[in-house]
Amino acid sequence: MYKAAAPYHQAMTLNHPPASPTPLRLLFDAQHRASRAQVEVSLAVRRDRLLRIQVLLNTHGQALAQAVQADFGVRSPQLTEIADLFVLRTLLSSTLKNLRQWMKPVKVRTPLYLQPARAYLQRQPLGVVGVVSPWNYPVQLALGPVITALAAGNRVMLKPSELTPQTSALLAELLGQAFAADELCVVLAGGDNPLELAAEFSSLPFDHLFFTGSTAVGRKVAEAAAANLTPTTLELGGKSPCIIDASCDMEQAAIKIAHGKLLNAGQTCIAPDYVLLPKGQEADFGEAFARAVAKLFPSIAGNPDYAAIISPRHHERLQAMLAQAEGEGARLQRINPAPANVAGASRQMAPVLVFDAPNSSQLLSEEIFGPILPVLPYDSLEQAIDYINARPRPLALYWFGSDTGSRDHVLANTVSGGVTVNDTLMHIAHENLPFGGVGESGWGSYHGEAGFLRLTQQKPVLLQSKWARGDLFYPPYGKRFDQVMGLLKRLL
Image 1 (cartoon, rainbow, N blue to C red):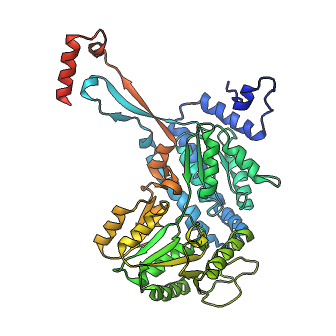
Image 2 (cartoon, rainbow, N blue to C red):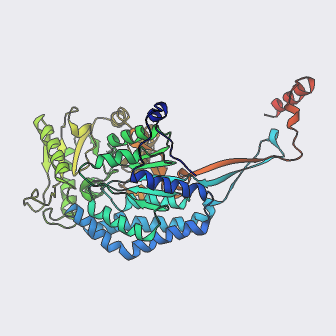
Image 3 (cartoon, rainbow, N blue to C red):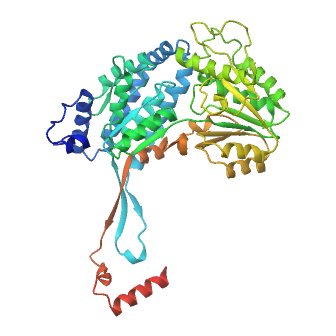
């Protein structure tokens, strides 16, 4: 039977008995025992778990979309359908189709000096996976990692965001009805200090901890996990650049950049965070972007298709960033196709382009996560590349243009989590492309087989042959050993 290990300070202080396990620890212990009692998880069991989530989405998708709308104040069910539910349905369909193949042992070629032995990789569940999900796409980013972890045969504990309480509560209710607690459970933050639950959750000795959120919080999660040597996947964010090449069609670029930036009012981890464009084209871009906004969102205030900022605190943060930049000399272009009060209780914030932002401004040093887009001119493509490379590596990079030489030069000389060329966001929708960050934008990828393998132990197995002559390498070493080694060296 699994017994929770005492923390290091308790192990060293023998005259102090360990504290009683918390409810959260009891949930973890139950999953841990179940995962060790059933190490092998069959295809049938995995498919059954995935199909239960599929039924949940098909049956309660509309209720989930309504809960998301209630949490945001303004966010259309259609946006949740395409950005949350459809993504999950696609993930489930692809996973169910490929799961049998992914689970198969993988044969590995054996080198000559070990033949006639055979070798393969045995794909096994890790055990218990913790998932910490954010608020911006509260269904997709909660259930996406859960689906991946279940496909890999793991037990899962999910901690959704406290900023979307109605969505989180509904997920807890629905998943609680569909799964036993030792298969999949949801833990909710109660009381006045949700950070306590987040800290305790991150400190559990999971077999893997999957976190989606800000870089600042990701650092704390990684630090807590490191105390248990818990491997992590961190899906963070950062400042994703959008490069407009001199060969670009400005109108086409503007509509795609506006869509990528303003989807969910900019509250998207891979939203374009700033635009780099040839010097002298700032006015052209400003006009094209304003036309694109008017086409996508003829009005802002009261428009159900234009999402609200999630909370007053986040809205105030965005306004403070704008005020700081403007106070330091930046020029703001506010875009409101049908002028009206867009502050109010709805927190619908009109898009803002920012020109001449000083390098010291928060807009250029922090992830914006809202409908604000700094525009930075460059004299040469090399200057744009240097600007990107002088900063932490971004989660996404976007390039617009028709010059394939310029495109390939940018791709060869920048490193980012992912890239979409002549569009925004779309690489995340490709089910066979891994999605993840690099450096400060995160580590570890998921989606498709990449996610399955991330949450799977690929155990190397070597099957020794009865005809093996490993004794040729045993001591005592002498002339025969030297002859064998000489032959092997010539064959390398």
